[in-house]
Image 1 (cartoon, rainbow, N blue to C red):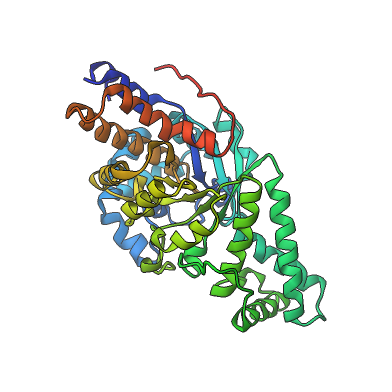
Image 2: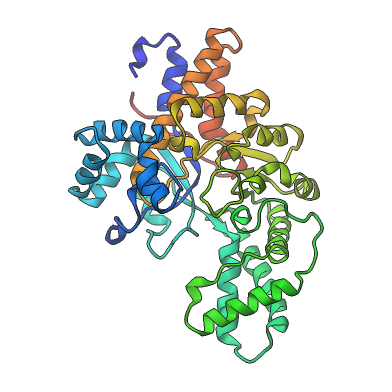
Length: 409
């Protein structure tokens, strides 16, 4: 966009150039694993044929193809984009796509296939402020169970459960005191849904059986199969984390809405979380991924509970441009502007960071300039909203203490 010719020049300059704190993202792949996963995951969380056959026919793919081919200087086709990126040195590829984003700091959840991904500090070469870590609580609990089972092969499973929760509390408390850890994250949405029991109840017999099955897998050399997905067990893990997060002033992110076919869509609405939010008033809840398609429900929660915040990520680049603008509009309907943050949900590939940033900046400008045009906002108010969403709110909520980096136009 030609900023100089924009009718609302201050708004355009802010929307397209302001420094960003990416409040929820994931590490990039190590170079040797750069082609480990289908590249179509850039714009879809589908799996199998739904990803490699169908997602390439979405508006999200068409737009991504156009934008990536322009930067890569190749033919405008998805196959040409894949061929061109494969010819490039990996660090050159990362710099090409991360350099233009003006992301100042990334808050990385490293619980996603971390055996294939780069470490947290590796990403500092692409940002002007240090990367920070977000700890995924379910992975911590699973890893502790693996350690306990290997260490004590004789004690009955039901007697080891006390050790699991004691060590889990100890680990989360240690992370909460680590300056490099800015928050926690739960993926209970994937495992058993967001209808978390508001009453903290000790896990029942079904949880014991799940843990026994996991123990058998570990002892049979199949530890990669360990996945806690029993409601009473996962609910209890979340209760422990919510208490520790509140005690140590660490926000806790929750995956809501958008995901793959592991999610039961009807249980991914954050509206299910109202009782648990009410039960932990001293804990800050971050609702991730715009809660799409439940954005209005998320906005409602941010409006009535002081400890609830909304991340408008992942819809960039997963939705069409008009869908992205609609998510921004729905967010602005009710959500207090000091409660909204943005993220790339970047993962695996540097292109995810680039596309998410490029498209989010455009959507913010399109929606806010329309409000200014209709005299529903002043340009100064719109500029302030952009600053809050892209930088200031995350800086405050995660207590980062950063100053926005200024870039040349």
